[in-house]
Image 1 (cartoon, rainbow, N blue to C red):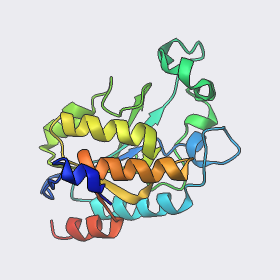
Image 2 (cartoon, rainbow, N blue to C red):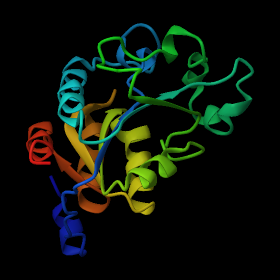
Image 3 (cartoon, rainbow, N blue to C red):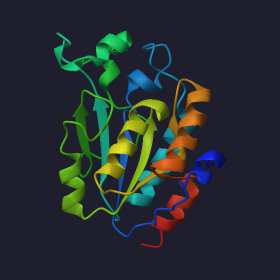
Length: 206
């Protein structure tokens, strides 16, 4: 998974598995998971299935946090990103595009939904404070898209002192090429990228 040139450049470390995990499910909302609903969507069936397996393993171990990206009707809160990505206009709060995918094992009695307007789950949200309160030393990341909000969140997670672990079979992207290249980049520089089965096996030891 790692890039050989990055290894030669000294990007050769490994983040240790933690004892206080949390799981963040990034933007697995209908606007990204329901093809035909918006131009942003792609088939995420298998990734949602793997995410649900991780949610089940996380129960009793740590917090499960979902993010939804969406905007007010006037779109002023999209800021400059709208200039680069006009399709964000379809992510209006209160619309079907901003609903969690109904296949997710979301439990309103214990899970948290964070609403965001930018790529990173850390930007402008209480996520850092929630993780710090839990004493999180291992943030498992699933969701969409690998090259966009997942990657941005992973970089911010590392910068914020929370070791990120990307479930490689539980993240999705519209572009297979970008999906692969960003997994390699994250594995080389910012995160551990592991199959869900490996992460679930670790959760069962806690």
